[in-house]
Amino acid sequence: MKELGVFCGSEQAKFTSQTVSERIRCLKRIISKRKVNAIIGKDNPDRRKCSKCPATMMVWFTIALGLFGDDSYRQVFKSLHRFAKNATPTRSALTLARAKLGIPVLAEVYRSVVKCLCNETTRGAFYRGLRLVAVDGFVLDLPDSEANCRAFGKPKNGSSLGAFPQLRIVALCEVGSHVFFEFLAKPIRCGEVTLAKHVYRSLPAGSLLTFDIGFFATELVKIVLERKSHFLGRAKVSRILKPIETLRDGSYLAKIYDTDYERIHDRNGTTIRVIEYTLDDPQRVGHNEVHRLVTSMLDPLEHPATVLIELYHERWEEEIAIDEIKTHARTAATLRSQSPAGVIQEVYGLLTAHFVVRKTMFDAASQATVAPRRISFTGALKILRVRLPEAPRSDRGIKQWHDNLIAEISEEVLPERRNRINPRVIKKTQSKWPKARPEHRKLPKLEKKFPDAVKVLI
Image (cartoon, rainbow, N blue to C red):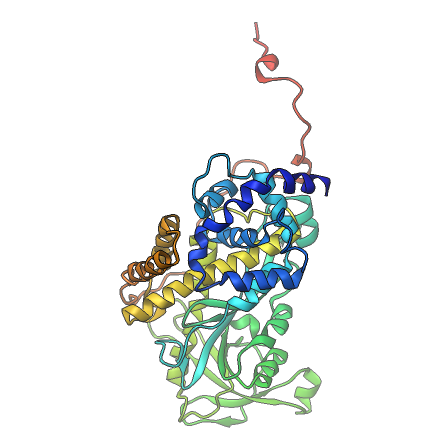
């Protein structure tokens, strides 16, 4: 804390002199400064009054770490502020300021700002009045610090551990906009179904939730129905689903149960509809294999099997959204934070930054009269990175800057997706180097310089 106090005193002028000209305030239409200040005051009423700790700027900075995923701390700061001599804080000063900001402020900013964007007029966002939502899980590699290893753990493969500690995230994604409007992050040892039980509580009423094979559990299905929503997902062919009525389109009704005992005695069952199909195209993955879908939409006339089979594949929009975060927004092997609290804070900032990009893309799609998924995420992100440093000072100039930004992004329209498919395989060469282990951390400092260690052999 003494070091933090020194930081507040020595760096105060550098921070407070720049807050007025923060370039990222040009995005105030998405995240208003008044809302950020209110959240900071709510979290700690005394913090907002402390001129030595500019928490408002650090909120923008943490979000910007997700926008400028490959830049250093100092470079990110420079992207947000105009040049002033000797005004850029050191990396350690920014790190300490992030630590003082904590998790709750970023969490509240995420919860108050990130939301579903689509309405029933948005292309590809609704099915018969139901909002299309997908659920999936993914992992993020973290810096290999002792604190992260203890808190999050490493993945296991038999008797060996993975190279990096990992964080598991299960998120709800609005299919039409690719917005992650709810998520839960836990250590890698926590399973996806366990996380989904909590995430499903935020499912909007009147949704159609699509999920992959690992999320088909009776407990999860009941939560979806309690939320006055429907589901459409994939199920294992080996799971016992005894037909109780065959429908006119070839699908059939069955019941699922919480336990095998209830299934055997037919107690407390939940009726679902099962659709089984195969592919007769030898070029496609899954050719001649049996695929099974389950849904709560029981009427074959209102919801034909062929329509639902095609609709299920809208779930892949979340896979694309995950790729946006893991591949395009950042190319580094791991997140930045060395501490568990910093990791969670960084994830909130990353997903908020993703929403900022997606909101500008949504507005651009409306201007271009195309579906939001037709706007290039990579193109929009690069335009935002380039134009943000050009942001003007005046409010009138900011409005014109924002209008130009939306107009430029609206030109990044992708062509219609091709009829193609790729096998789910990976090609990665094995390294010849030994695996990094705990004993390779914190090596003692070298006592000799390189020239002093050289000994010519005679």
